[in-house]
Image 1 (tube, rainbow, N blue to C red):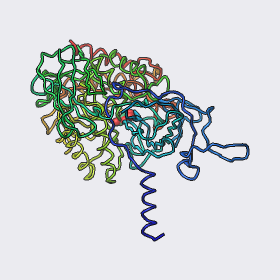
Image 2 (cartoon, protein in one colour):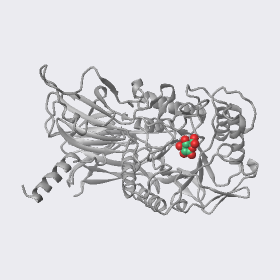
Image 3 (tube, helix red, strand yellow):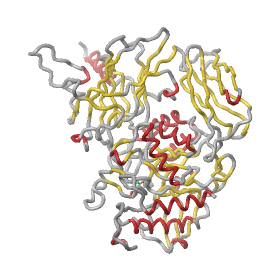
Image 4 (cartoon, rainbow, N blue to C red):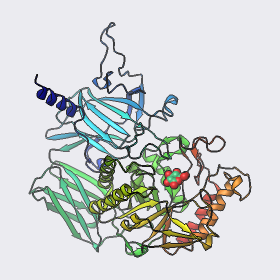
Length: 594
Ligand code: GCB
């Protein structure tokens, strides 16, 4: 074989092996014709990650007869639950950060003219997907959906779906290699087998016209560029039963005038809708609202709104596990409602759809964020591409959720040439992808001098709402008496205090307001009392989010007396007990409601 030919062969093998990196997936699998593939999946734990190399676990070898020698094979006795992080399912996996291989076998009888897709809600952090012996592709990023088509590969019996889920922290990953939360690995969200017609509605956007409260606007788009296809739009409660027709791009615009009851936190009205074309349909529940800024105000449906928020990690502390189900979402959003919130900051990565949807039902506005977090490697050019893809994935997924009002592009990143350039480009990208929502980022570099706090990071110019994380009374001293701290801004924009707080172990009574006896509930409560005093004086403050709803696990927090592997800044303990600071926050929020 000539050198050139050999080169081409090797390249094609490489491409085949890495083929089909997942693109953004179809939206709203929950509203489509699909079968859930959740359950117990066979697994092989692969600490040294040899399954992708010489052990070739993806080949799914089985020993036949007594003399055949296969070291790595799936066995029905070794299973883990999908969805669910693997760390919380076996004691030996508690701090495991490498590959677990999963296998699911299933039968499927495809209908005539049907297409089949395997859709993953999320796999943390890298997923390599194999189906009936063929590599379908790879997805990087632990918190966003992806899918692969399997129409031409399915058999009626014994389809084999194999996934390598690798949770190693990656220096140029998103997040990077250090972060303050638990690195739950595995197939952490639902897996669906989605059935569509040959031609189906891949994407749609239905919302209130930002400039006309009596008009619904948007579009529906087919998976292929087919002109002249009719799409029916049904919103029974508004007596809408319209037919729209696709153009040569497979795109059809929606514009309908109606008398619409708007979505608000107090009355979170959602309308059942259905989109259908011949052989295919998709259902959703959609709310209508506008969200804008005007000077330093945030306007919901044209009226100023103060965001009574709380930060939430996707974790159920009592279970020491990643939250993944409708029931888990009910726990987290139930707590936020009980606290008196109208807003939740879902940190520091896109959370599952159950949470976003339940928040929408309960009247909670949402800040969504991608894990561009602290020590991220901005100097590596692939980081920006990864961040951009992640933004595309989450915006595509959640753009019909009216409660999502803020897309956050970063949390606590120190200014540098590369960081500024990347964040400015990401902010612009969000505006292109979704001009109807607000872009934000959480900054922690407010400069302070002479008792004054001043917003002047150059990236702040490019966001609509400035998030500020400050830990006065905990990581930093108070610059002066709380009510005397003067906040200055070079920008005529709203600010949210996106984090504040301190740590306390529930029921730790070492009394006193001095730092030496920190970790007591009193000390933490005192920080809250002072913070609220300061908040009342900041003219451009339009919302606050205490850090954090509940104590959360973090291998970053191994202090051996109090933390023991937990970040203890929760308003709730790791068992869901209310600390003193909870009651202080709740009382203020109740007061703000009236
Ligand atoms: C922060 C980070 C958050 C941490 C928190 C803390 O500023 O944004 O992820 O967990 O502080 O507890 O230090």
